[in-house]
Image (cartoon, rainbow, N blue to C red; front, side, top):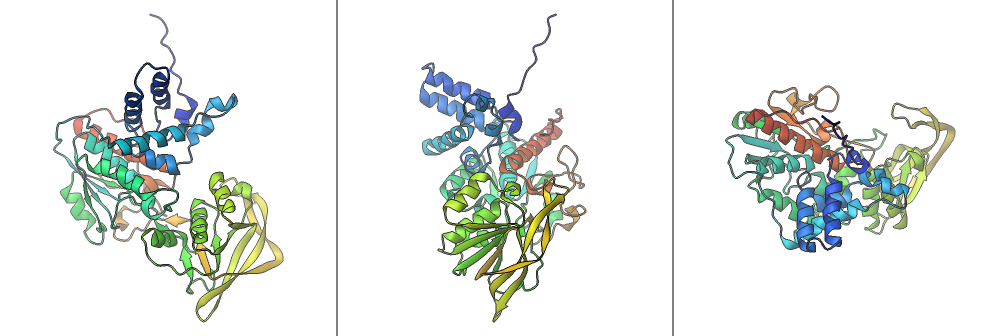
Length: 422
């Protein structure tokens, strides 16, 4: 027998946490370009290839950092293939045409699955289970589905009509959505566990982390996610003329850009340099273009107030020392170098965490839920994905939701367990 041909995975596909079949997508579109198949047929085929793994292409293309493009070897010749733009076009085109997802089987499976949380991981898990004929019920604490996609990302980055349309396509597969229900508070987790054959835990890290500074408890101080949630829920927020945002991630950039839309003068404080900023470069550039000022190598020391409301922020100049466990150089204070910046509001966007109230038995030591490589938690029959496995990008959450669904299906039907995503 001859040697078996070695299959090489394209760099873009390896870089995508979902392992999206980008080669197949582009080949279908290339066939239409060559006149081999009609454009409409090609677009639908390509969309169905994309949604084999990702049920939210129009959403994902707007907020994903598109690591696939960074790995595209076409960039060595001129520029990377616009994979993100292709995905966005296909997602928007499918919404405009009213395309529906198709089930893999018409057979109704006997098992029932509960999905706790309707963020990207929960939606992905529900989608892939529903396509396989399972009865899925999503429990969502907020009034509308979407999790961080709806309540943590500004409208100007992710239009809500796009989010609503792609979620509706998932629900059209027969997924039941129960909103305004917090599992562990409104309904005991053990009751869910007893009623359903398997549970998927997909609650997001939607709790802001405080700075623990003197005076931080005064009026006018918001957590980054709390601020975005209020704005995205249409609730009134009090924003003054001078707003200071602390943090260097995408949440900090989003909060700063939202505050600018309230006509505030916005300053971001970041304790390292621009090179260490975890936010996407395009988000930093957008913030700067919109008038956000960034002060690097600075950290807050104390929140100063007048009559119970923030008036200014005492800050410390920093310099970079030796690398820490993240590989970034550790910021250290510059002796005797402080300054004060006026502030009508302080938005703290340094990190986020899971709110485990009511679900304490599922909580592992420290912050995250512990599971094995197949996605199980330490509780039998409970899977987890998304932020509960560690904060990551949207594509990672979608991949973990899909893998959990595929593993559940394999376990129910006695099939081989699929390999875990990288």
